[in-house]
Amino acid sequence: MEVRLALSFSDEDKVGTLQLHDNALVIILRIGGYDMKRVLVDQGSDAKIMYPDLFKGLKLKPNDLACYDSPLIGFDGKIVFSKGQIKLHVQAGLEVVEVNFIVVDTYSPYTVIVARS
Image (cartoon, rainbow, N blue to C red; front, side):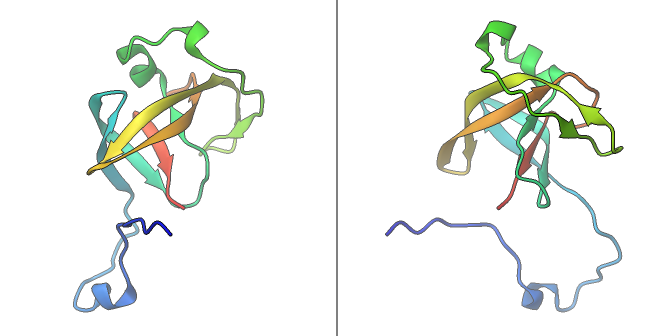
């Protein structure tokens, strides 16, 4: 059996702290061999989303994408259609995993959104 380490916090970790806000967890991840800033960890989603800035920055082309034809619902409640999906290596600490990113052509202050199971 393989044991995977996870970054997590318990209620005991909150003792002595003020919880005035429910701030987003924004981190840096190594994606496709490059350190990417502004990575949003979304605990309420299973989708991994890539935005145009990263797609272009990695010099990826439309023919690098596999088909993905399911629409998504954006933060504003509007339907967003994907350009496709792409599998890239993502490194967090010493662990490297392959992640299927759904590529969308819409604005976001984040480079990607990753899910946390």
